[in-house]
Amino acid sequence: MQPMFLRVLPFALGFFLVANGVFLSAGGASLRFTDLIALIVAALFGMKAFGRANWSAVGVGAALAFMPVAWAGLAVLGIAERATLAQGARWVFAVPWALVLVAVAHEEPGRTRFVKGIAVGCAFNALVIVAQQYGFDGPLARLGFSSFGERIVWVGQQLRMPGLHGSPSASSAVLSLIAPATLWLYLKDRVSLWWPLVGYASAGVGLHLTASRSPLLMLGISTGFALLITLSRRRALGLWAIAIMVGLPLLIVVGPPGGWVRWTDVGDTTVNASNRLHTNVSTMELSLQQPLGRGVEGGQRALFEETGYVATHNAWLQASLVYGIPMALAIFAAFASAIFRLRYGWKSEAFWPGLLAFHLSGIFFFEEHLTNPTFVILTMWLVVLAVIPVRAGPRPAQSTRVP
Image 1 (cartoon, rainbow, N blue to C red):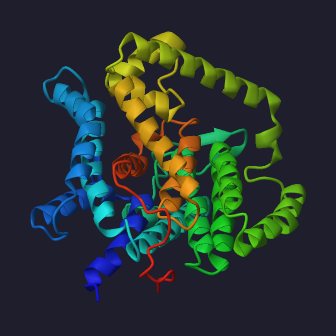
Image 2 (tube, rainbow, N blue to C red; image 1 turned 90 degrees about the vertical axis):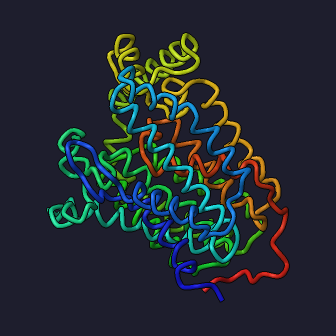
């Protein structure tokens, strides 16, 4: 029998990973829940509360964090600037997160509890967005769970709700994680059909109020990908039937989240695609000119001089511009490894990391999501998992259902 702390911990980690509110804010800087948890976890590892650390994982995590730490050091010396220091700290905080996830959420029942925490946390993100829509952001902000005043964005006459993560794009991307989470839980017989139904309904409402397109697109692609992997499963066939008989009529009658105008405005789409292509190509050129990175502010200045924009609109290119091509390639290789491990099938331990890596790979093509602690932690975890062997099938001595 596990101690209560170890039984609750995986769920709490999953919840606060995506429901990442502000614990303390002062002088323009903020300490988020994920930062606080990282400090606590690091202390617990020091006291050997989780046993001996996986030294392979420690080495890989330290290697990935090397360039962010190096650039943070330059910021301390006054050569780089404040945002570079803050982002470097977030990559350091991601290392204890990756280690504790390996310790408590790599095997059952911790894995299921962790994914349930992510699913519930994503639903909470949708609740925050709805609360902002109806003017209840004040009480949530006092608890650290609302960022309404940080960034106001309009699309035509529609105010895009910023959610919990500071901007509509960031909040909607985190919310989209409810798709791989609830799909994995349902397809692995961990939960009933109500979990994906409620999860997708929450995502639909949240994505409508944020008027976000790329997370919705990846939500659909990841869903189709997961159902193709599990095509032989009766549960997967049931979800296909629901998608065709319920989802398609709703799409035709009601329209997609954000409304048809958001998806059929050719002028807006063309300008948006053109700007993104311009920043992507320019970022690649700047990365090749300085392969070891430029830091956060240095990268933004160089990109602004080339394009008039400070955002790369691509997390893969963001990593190469800020921290260098080797780090971007390491992340890409780890994600590719996780996805390639899906060849072991849906019964294997590789199904959840592979499905998550596939989803993140897609949304990383649309925005600079490696400024968000949630995605920094998930990236670090997937890189660490690349050096941990997986079994091709389920462990024979363990139950497949977790209370």
